[in-house]
Amino acid sequence: MKRLFPFFLTTILLAGCASSSPVVPVDQRVIEKVFEVQKPKAELYVLCMDWVVKSFKSAKAVIQYQDKEAGKIVGKGIMVVKYGMGIPMDTHFTLTIEVKDNKIRASVEDAFILVSVSGNSSESRLDSDFAINKCLRPAVDNLYASLYAMLTAKSSEW
Image (cartoon, rainbow, N blue to C red; front, side):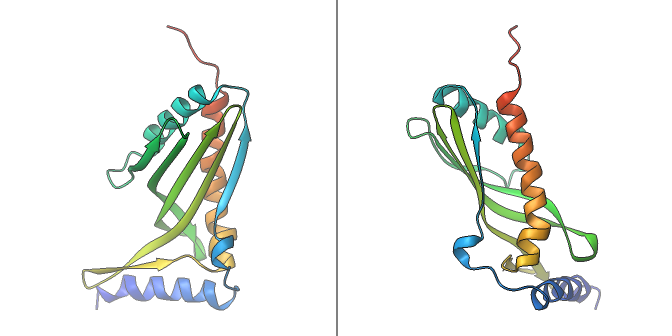
């Protein structure tokens, strides 16, 4: 019974969110932000790579693809997000950063939580308006704010 409690709690929280909130179409489940920063592409790329390394310390959060010439970084990340009744849960997602001269675009998509029952885990995709726009979006906005701070920080010459 003790093993089933987390499953029931998660199910109740997610069911509560889903029943009171409409499902968001798949193409609208991407949380995207464009930043205009007056720096060349090469410098922005290095800053973004540095930010990814410093922001995602988990061994499970890794860069899946990087191409300096194309200016693209794709990685898997995990962050704690508070859902219904303020319950914090590890939320997995895909982060894509695209870099051009003076501009970057960051997007978070494919967000899910892991639900465990008796040692077996399954993915529960975030698809309700409440989960995406009221819970996940504020956490992603904080993530983007830290990226912007890194991009606009004065570099220290040593």
